[in-house]
Length: 338
Ligand code: EPU
Image 1 (spheres, rainbow, N blue to C red):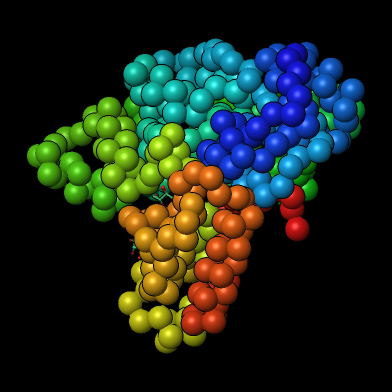
Image 2: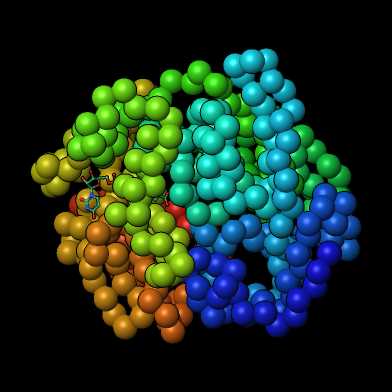
C-alpha cells in the first residue's frame, strides 16, 4: 500500500484538471484493499483510471487507486474461455491481449480509456457491444466491513451505461477483479455503418477479429480526442432514451433526428445530434470547449477548472431542453456529487 499526500489529480484523471487530493492510497493487492477498507471504511473514494470522472473541487476524503494487476485463465473448454483480470489492468490492454490470443467478444470495445475494474460500473459500450455481453462475475470488497464478495451477472442490473454499482452499491464497494467469458468462435459484429465503411474502403470482405479490432481503433482515433493530448472523458452525456409517445413529440420539433428503436418499445436518440443542432460543436471558451468532431465530448486544453466544464455542460443541457424538450443526463461521474 502506498500513501501520497497533497497530490494533484491532473495526471490521475483524463480531464487533467489540477484539483488536489489530500490523501491518495495506491492498493496493489486484494489484501491491501481489505486493510484500507478496515482502516478508512466508507470514507474512501475509489478512482480507477480516472477516465469517467469530472473533479470540480479539492478532495478531502482519502482516494483509493486500485492498481491490482494480473490476468488468469480460469476455465477453457476449447471454445469458451474465462479470463479473470485484476481491476487495475488497462481496459484496452486487456482487449488487445484477448484479440492477440484469438479470444472473441470484446474486440468492439478497443481503445476505451480506463481500467477493467471500472468497466462494469457504467457497463461500457461501443459499436454494438456492451461489456455485459461477456461479463461473468466480479469480486469486490465491501468498504464498510472489509468483506470479500462475488457478484454474478444476474445480480448486476446492467443497463445502458448503468448497473447496480452506479445505484444501490454506489460508493460502497471496491471492485478487485472482473471475469469475462470469451469464445474462440465468437461471431464478429460489424453492423455499425462506420465499421462497414472502414472494411469496404480496404476491400476486406471476410474480416477477421484483428481487422475489426483495427477498424475500431482507427475509427475512434479519427473521431475522439486522445486524453493524452486533450483532456476529456469521452461522451459527457448519455444518449437520451424516451417512450415511443415522447419520441413522437420530440420528432415534431426535431425533424431528421436519428433514432434507434429498442426491443422494449423505447427509443434512443444521439445526444450529439441535439448538441450539434444547438450550435455547440467546436465551441471554445479559453481552456474548455466542445470537440470539433464529436459534439458529445467536452474538452479541456489545459489550465482550466473542472467547474467550468460543469457550467458548460449545464448551458448545453438547458439549450437542448429549451429547444427540444429533451433532458440530457451526464454519463460522467461528477465530484462532488450534487
Ligand atoms: N452526431 C451528430 N453530431 C456529432 C456527432 C454525432 O449529429 O457531432 C450524430 C450522428 O447522427 C451520428 C450519431 O450522432 O450518427 C451517433 O454518433 P456516434 O456514432 O459518434 O455515437 P454516439 O451516440 O455519439 C455512442 C457512445 C460512445 C461510443 C459510440 C460508438 C454514448 C453516450 N456514447 O456515441 O461511447 O463510442 O456510440 O458506439 O452512448 C463513451 O461512452 O464515452 C463513448 C465514447
